[in-house]
Image 1: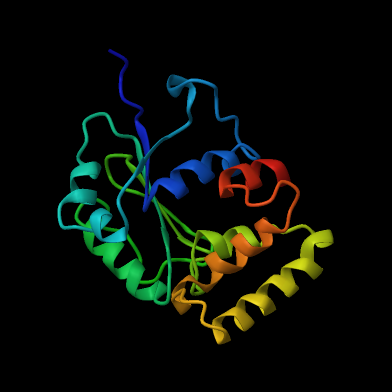
Image 2: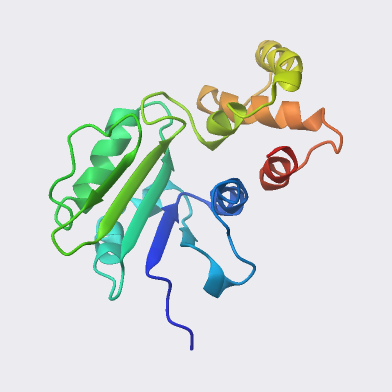
Length: 194
């Protein structure tokens, strides 16, 4: 039985789990087999499952763990989201700041365990994975991106029922629907455009 990866990354859901390796591949080699992955990604059934009391705390106590990362959507309350993550990790990593730095966070405890956190899109703004990915729309796609944003707003006025907190999801998927290959999944779109 292979040894578990000593580096783990916790994400909110399956979409994050699929997209992040494709995005990371631009910066570090991902590897073709699980044993070659630079980090093992564990997805949850949403933020509430990830932030349940005991989940992050247990992850931080995993035998052999050298690094634990957490990537979540800021949604409408980035400071509140950070406070909840910090509450879960503070016992294992006491030096966590009250506010997450704009550049993200990597802290090391006295045992050498690294703990990292990133709130999509930029540790300060409201948003989510889709907001973050929209930052990478190439210059030649910006005109269509602006149009997609406007049309999603119009659709809201015509009965589109998506929640305002999910507006960025509606916008990026609308933009993707107008690409060649229409309606690609986020991870394939990232792969095609990175």
